[in-house]
Length: 236
Image 1: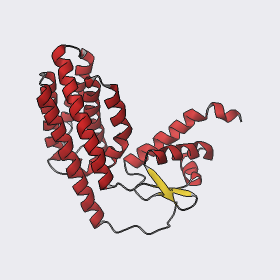
Image 2 (image 1 turned 90 degrees about the vertical axis):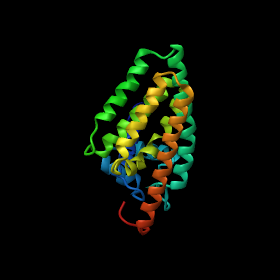
Image 3 (image 1 turned 135 degrees about the vertical axis):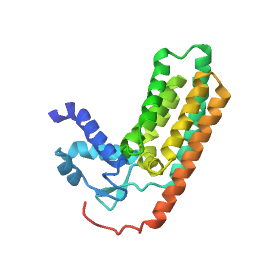
Image 4 (image 1 turned 45 degrees about the vertical axis):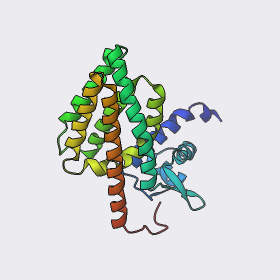
């Protein structure tokens, strides 16, 4: 039983590799996964795979599929709307707290610098940038605002749900003009925060997240209407 001592690190590695594949669509919705198939795919033993699969299941990224397998969970627009409603409130709170900290001088230069750097990096991305990079830049900006708020609970709560948001963010970021609009909105949010305008910052942040969530959910509904229902079975 000596393997127990080093298993946690390997479990984390398997979890992170599977999570990345689910987020970027390499493992698409409905893809069947078994301990055997994942172990063979990653070149590891079945035990860390078993633990990693159960963690992803608890996070809602995998669902039961038959007696012995799991499958990548579908992206549910109703669930997505629920998540965006919560994130709207938290993004608004984070923006307001960040503006208050800027006004009072409690925010550090590093915290402000991180937010400004994330904004500048995102605005440099062009329309031909890979969607994965666009998603990463968007997450980096919002995460910087959450840190600027000084509220650890906001950071932790949203961070745990990022995989669900990231799975479908590409739907909107690939729409012509959407990327430029989002970064204009990001710019306005950070401008209000740095100016210490708490109410304005909160309103802008809430409006940005609410509209992005509803647009994404509607587009997801449209995608589902155009996609035929998958057949049961298939290769693992």
